Image (cartoon, rainbow, N blue to C red):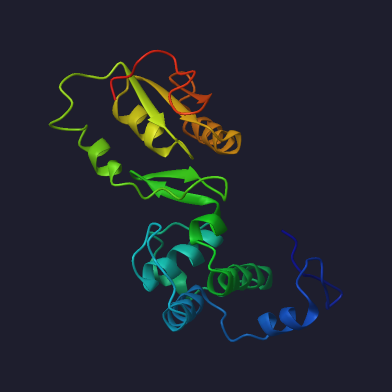
Length: 219
């Protein structure tokens, strides 16, 4: 993404943002992290946004988007919320907030990241945003339904690969197959395999349903 930059006290526009929109952003009184979170909460309530992709309320959604957009951790010290933002950060943040409000783009897609089983996964429009109740089953090792340690795990219609990769963390000796009909989804799954460093035990298979899958699976 391109941002405006200053040269000899003159602002140069180097992005699709038109001048009027840029002028509104720069003269905004929203200058701190806390300002933007508060404003976002008010707008989210006013626009009746839906929450359900990792958060269930406007406050958590606003905090996730604002902090995530600036690559700051969720657990940031409260004192940092009153730090002033740079102009390019303000522009970037307000453009994301505008897309969240006006286009209803989920925060996970705006940030390119979603959380599942306490782990970060790459996501975009090629895959669904993870919010499966299976996460709780994985963390409990499928108790009491799984009697023995699984040798092979199949994540069918894998999407981002989050379920299978989370299983790979929980069951350290299992081979994990991530299968999907969509080549585009498997591209994302492969990115997540690389991100989590599990390529020795986790791999992707393209196919329709169970077609082309190697043998049977324990889960």
